[in-house]
Image 1 (spheres, rainbow over the protein chains, first blue to last red):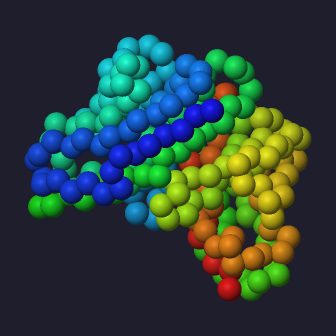
Image 2 (spheres, each protein chain N blue to C red):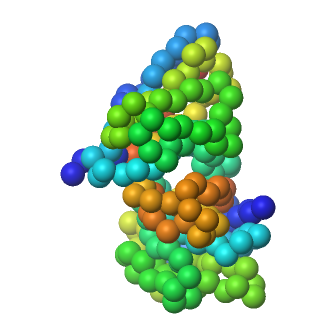
Length: 116
Length: 114
């Protein structure tokens, strides 16, 4: 069994301040973890992924996330928010290494508002 | 490369009508997926395919059918639309198993069933 919990449905930050979007997961198997971003009326775009290599993962647009197995967390951070970061962010967990299809579980999303 | 495309972008149906959503990808991906997105619920998998000629049920398959006659296309059908199927539908594809490979998403189809 697996699940994903995004701890905040909405986060509001001022432009130029740090961003923290929180994601906790549970998985019976070694997971791969992803963060996707969705801008209004658009499809989802991959920000970054963890698939068992380095626990600190760097993604596009200055985002990064750290896989912490002991805390079952995969929080997304960015040092300085930009107006273009305003979007909805999804944390995704997938069990890894079984071949074929594995269940993909999406979190319910966190809407990030950036205030000028 | 167009990536993943979906047609139509918008559609309004009356209860009981049928329609087909088309997804096309030009990346030669083996895996394709159909999701629906509803407010506060994230994305939920409807059906998926791990190769041409294969399909399988996802998390919420009832009321939908799919076909993958060609590797690049994945069709989602609604035989008798219901208001509960009002949603935004996303198609995605990946080169291999989702545990290792990025899913590429289309721009979505916004469906309203009256």
